[in-house]
Every structure is written in C-alpha cells, then in structure tokens.
Length: 182
Image (cartoon, rainbow, N blue to C red; front, side, top):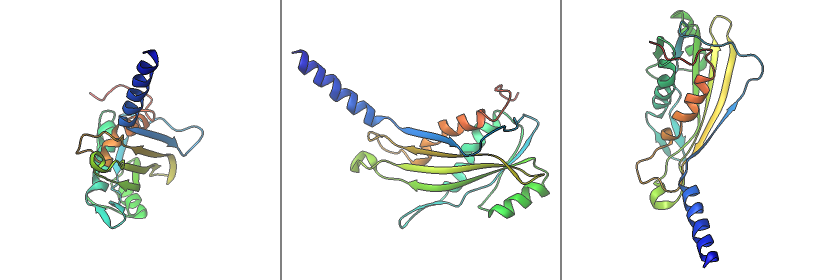
C-alpha cells in the first residue's frame, strides 16, 4: 500500500516537473557595473526576427524589445523603442544623435516555437541583451537569457512567454533604487 502511494507521488512529481517552464540568466560582464537611475535615458533597439529552420517569426524582434520596455518603464521615464531592426553601429549612432545615455541592444540567438501540447517538443528561446553607454561606447552590462517551456503548455504559449521573468530580474538588478517611477 505504501509503495503504491510512493509510486503515485513520484509519478505526480515527475508530471508536475515536466509542466514547469525553466529559464536562466547568465551575466556576461564581471566587476562593477554603474547603477542606472530613473533620470537616465534609454534607447531600446530592435533585434532581427528569430528564425528556426525555414520558419521566420515575424515580429519576434519587436516583441523582445517590448518585453525589455516593460520592466524598464517601471524604473525610468525617458525611453524610446526602435521601430525596426538596426545594425549595431546604426543603433549606436541613433542613440547618440538623440542624446540617449544608454543603448539597449537585444539580439535573438535562438527562437523555436512548437505545438508543445500536441508534439511534446518544448518551445526554446535564447537572447542576448547588451547595455552600452553611448558617450563612451562602453559595454556596461550584458546577459544571455534562455528559456524552455514545460511540456504541458495547454496551448498558445510562445517563446516570448519565457522571457518576462528573467528580463525583469536582469533589469531590476541594474538599478540602485528598486522603487518604481512615479
């Protein structure tokens, strides 16, 4: 009787673990990073759209920029998001011309969307976010964020759904004051 109960608990635990999304945040820079403030200004560039095999995920680059905007808007007032992808050098020049203190340059490294609820293949995403001080062209912080969906997605989940929590964590750690802008 007890072994049957343990077997059921183990099976349920395995099933629930397969339902959970996973993500990781790996900072690429080491050492002292200047703390950002609500008075700083930010230009968020737009990544090229993600591609997996023959599939191009239209709008995924802009979606990533919007995900970055959300936690940043809680902490700063002067923010602009690009309208379309710009190569790195063009984004730096634009941010300098418009007098933004920081450029946030996201890059989609991997974007894989599957009908997980039907085929059991998880969605996967990996992005790089770089923050550049425009006056010096110095990279002040960078991170690789990756995510993988659980197997029980109940339909409609997409790779961008794996990003808000780790992006929030990354952005919030850059600010000295964790208070929201009022």
